[in-house]
Amino acid sequence: MIAKLPKSDIQANCLIAGKWVRGEESLTPIHSPYNNQKIGEATEPSRAQIEAALQAASAAQKEWAKLPIKERSKILFQFRNILIRDLDEISHLKASESGKTFEEGKAGLLKGIEVLEFALSIQNLDINGKLEVSRGVTCEYRREPLGVVLNVTPFNFPAMVPMWTIPIAIALGNSYVWKPSEKTPLTSSRIASALMEAGLPAGILTVLPGGSKTVEHLIDHPIIQAIGFVGSTKVARIVYERGTKLGKRVLALGGAKNHIILLPDANPELSGIGISDSFTGCAGQRCMAASVLLAVGNVDVHIEKIIARASSLTLGDDMGAIISKAQVEFLKSSIDQAEKDGAKVILDGRKTAPPAGMSAGNWIGPTILDHVKPGSNAHTTELFGPVLSIIRVKDLSEAIAIQSTSAYGNACSVFTSSGAMADRVTREARAGMVGVNVGVPVPREPFSFGGVRASKFGHGDITGMHSLDFWSDVKKITTKWEMQTDSNWMS
Ligand code: NAD
Image 1: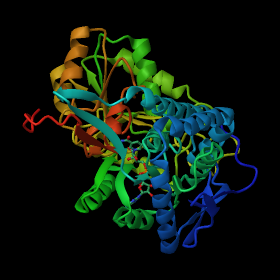
Image 2: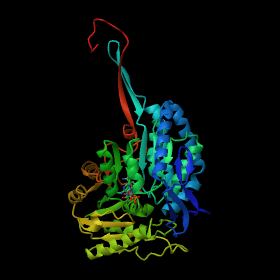
Image 3: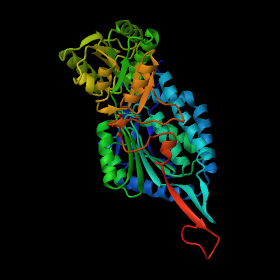
Image 4: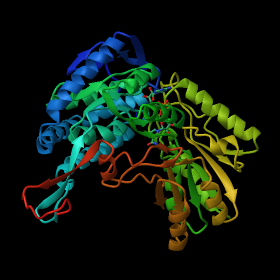
């Protein structure tokens, strides 16, 4: 369903030292992808404001780090209560500015809350370790925060992706600087307000809307100790290289081109729904969306089911809008190009009617391209829209050969009723997240999220236990209190 647009303009200002202030650098209007109506505006901070924000963040972090994790977690628990209380309101806002359906907006926020619940369990799971390693001598692990950390987020999940890192980094004792997408800054203000209402001390969360200039200035600033990034591969690489050149810790998640392998023994109903929902969900604007279907042998019955499911969707009710007019044009021209490259358009969304009253918005219907050639643009380029490219292959070996040489490596799924075939794909697919009869194999907490190859620069994953080592340092302490004289350094 189409979300309710805000009744009046929402302001996305800067959260600096616990206060909302207008950014002095620039003002950007924000329009809803549904109908391009203005729904708010965002202000970008000046250099002086960024400096003031980082100084305040650094001072506040020193006090925050002194609190036991149980105390810090109490505030996060209250944050969870507020998000649940305001779930519908926040979901309407984030859907309005990102173009998702209301249900997708809500699902993303709930997934973010699941990460928050994981962060609340760090206090009980991550109890470190202490051992008497030799007579009278103990060794101990102690996890310590890094200081002030930066996270840069994309437009397509304005709440869920930031929630992958905000609760974990803050629970561990860091101060968190958030540079939300310039396309969806309104949700970030709402999420930050909820965290402030929960009782977060001033300076522990800083929000600085803006574009690449703000990101560059933040990466280069000596107060910033670590950088998390989620967005396109092009920018992930830029951020990773800029940060690591300065010796900073960077985890930068990039784009994707996810392959699904469809075998003739797959359940046609299950695969029809799973594959269709994967490429049409969030209008294909998600890094876990199915993008390439490797159709093994004769799977025409299955493909008919995918077409039937995708063509039954109504724009607005079941599938949301695209982030910008330029992106709609890019998708249409990519479909035109695929036809020129020899693909057959078996479901054409280029002329699908927008929802009533929304013709000024950014809409395109589900599109399926058959007989796409391996290596062509429709196979290799991340389109980021509801477009599925089918490549016909003779057997599973050919399918795996194509998947495993893709530049990206976020997700891969297989649809089959054979355990042996599925097992082979889970072993040989080159992807960080693999699904068996699951169209969108996003691991649920406490399993962590992250791809490989051009879908991720840096080590570890962005959520789950693997993320703790990214947002903290582990200090090793060796202690001896018994002062024996007959001992050497090992005793
Ligand atoms: P984007 O790369 O354009 O922008 C992401 C962030 O980077 C934004 O905050 C933006 O302001 C900032 N940015 C843009 N150009 C920059 C530059 N030159 N220097 C520094 N910062 C810059 O991505 P987007 O269009 O917002 O999001 C869509 C992309 O994100 C897709 O490629 C999608 O696959 C990817 N994504 C990946 C994951 C994942 O987990 N791997 C999750 C969500 C989205």
